[in-house]
Structures are given as structure tokens and as C-alpha cells.
Length: 159
Length: 159
DNA sequence: TGAATCTATTTCGATATCGAAACATCTGAT
DNA sequence: ATCAGATGTTTCGATATCGAAATAGATTCA
Image (cartoon, rainbow over all chains, first blue to last red; front, top):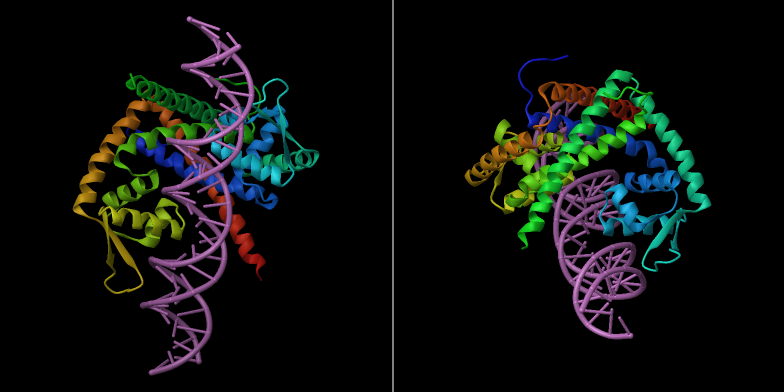
């Protein structure tokens, strides 16, 4: 494609934000009929594919703050889509699992959502997708490494 | 790189979210010292590089809702970084421009931010960046087209 | 065992964002 | 010239998210 001059990191980031916003809008519209937000949808999908999880595990995998996870599970519990159980041996932890209703909802919603995404991305060839995947993975790892380095640097400053 | 089976749209979206979150965290940390959030930073950067803009133009280019733009400009005006002027001939529109203080701040901050991003992305070769850019652009356009089609479909339903 | 420390979760207060309604001004058709 | 509809902006009420403090329970070690 376009070969030109060197592509600045800033320009790449701008393009990424724009693409992300567009795909996110698409993804949110795809599930809006369920009354679920994207985060809540992702939490349900995790519970479907990974089974019951603790609050902390949900927070980590969904990349939400603990407080946000509590709020998300509150919302889902209010709608009877999940249940907060107890851990067998550690009474601090709440084990969250899908209710039958929640499982039914997320099974339907997830497959419709997947179809919508496939349909939307149809113009991208297998090679396009693979290239994008690899690039995003590499960029994500690079950024995550920088973030980790920075937070460890700040950790050390407390000494 | 990894060739394997076909890459699902869902998997690609998951990887994209994760990468986006990591880069966004990095970008926010890079400007946190100024007390600016990413949206406000982007608005200042737009004003620097494109000159005075109306609220509507800012909203469109920053992809913010009108209400969010009002709130953003309120924040920036409170800090004396921008000024709300009037349009010469259309009294509905407010023309927003940088103050001297705002210009000074965004010039410094923007160049530091650019350096930070370049440094972080150093592991990505020029080819990596170009491939990522092209893929993101294509995906963004595809998603935007789907979104537009959908909103026009809904527009029509009112008939 | 008991005290200090660590870990899991929730509560609290603050913030950015949004959609819809309200308001002000402009434009175009008659 | 006027009025109906279009356009630009702000206000309002609601929501998701966050970091930090609070709480409760586990673990370690002297």
C-alpha cells in the first residue's frame, strides 16, 4: 500500500483511536438490544467460556478496576444473569457464575455478535486480519511492557 | 508470523481492545503531569494544528458528543487554556481558540508526548507500523461504513 | 497463639461521557 | 416580512468508570 515517509508513532496512535472508536460503536450497537453494555457483555462471555470466576479474576481479565467490577456484577445480578456464590475455603472471595437465564442470554447474544463482527469485517482478507492481529499484538505487548516498567519505577520511588 | 487457522473477527477485536487499552494507558500516563485528560489534550492539539474551531467542528474531529465538547471546553476555559470567541457573522457559533498560555502548554506537552510514543513504539519497524496503519485504516473505514449504513437504515424507519 | 501483614471485596466521592430536551439563531419558501 | 424548519450550543439527568479508603478474612512468623 502507501509506502512514503516514515510513519510517526503519533499518527499511528491517532489512526488506531479512530478505528477503535468505529469498531467499538459497531460492537455496542450489535448488543444494544440486550440492554447490556460492552463491559457487561464481556464479563458474561468470560463466564460462559471460562466458567465461574472470582471478582479479582474478572477484574483482571476484563481490565476493569475492582470498583468497576463490583458495579458490573451488581448490574448483572440485579438482572438475574449471574449469581454471587461463596468460595469453599476462602470466605473473602465471591465466586461469580452464570444463572440459567444468563447463560441462555449470553449464548444467543454472543453468537449473533460474532456473526455481526464477521459480516462487518468481510472486506478484510485472511492475510489482512493476520497482519493486523500480529501488529496489534506486538504493539500491545510493547505498550504493556512500558506501562509495567513505569509502574515498577514508581514502586521503587517509595523507598 | 503465525499462519495457522482462520482468524475470527471476534478474536481480532479482543486483541484490538487489549492493545488499545495498553496504548491508551501509556498515552494518559504520558500527559498526566499536565492535569489534562486524553480528550482535553486532543482538543488542544487540534486547536494548535488547525487553528480556531467551532464547538461543532471540535466535536466532530474529536469524536465527542456535543455535550461532552461543552464540558471539555468548560474545563479548558476554566484553566485559561482556551477562549470562547464569537463568530463574525453567525451568532450561534462559538469559536474556540488557544490562549497564549494554552498554546505554550500544548506545544511543550505535545512534543514530549510524541517523543514518549516514539520511544514506546521503538520495537516496531517501519514495515510493522505501515502494516498496522494500513490494517487499522481499512478496518476503521469498514466499521464506519457499517455504522453509517445502520444509522441511515434507522433514519429510514421513521417513515 | 497473636500481631503484623497481605489479599479480596465493597463503599465512597469524583469525573468524563452520553442522549435528549431546551434554547438561540439562522435560512428558505411563500 | 414572516414563519417553519434547520442548525449550533448548552443544560439536564443518568451512567460507567476510577482511585482511595474501609472492611473482612487469610497468612506468616516470632
